[in-house]
Image 1 (tube, rainbow, N blue to C red):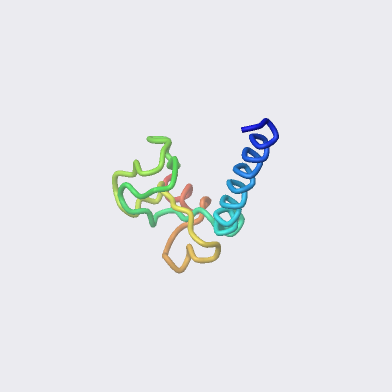
Image 2 (image 1 turned 60 degrees about the vertical axis):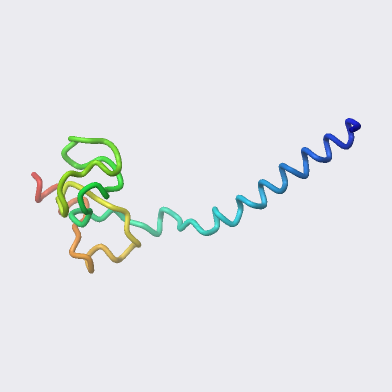
Length: 94
């Protein structure tokens, strides 16, 4: 294979990879369309660190519906799930 053919093959591979990745990114909702909702996460299903600092990773909540644990939910749906805002959760745990 010549150098020109090698470069063309590499460019084609790169373009194909970029085109395949674009639809996946388009399907992901923007972070602005989500909000943290406290007190609705089931045990082991929280999204990240809790308010009390007893853990710093997703999936480490020990009890369901703990006001210190949160999940991302579509913006505007937290209250319908009987969840708490960050300020409400801090006040409840405070």
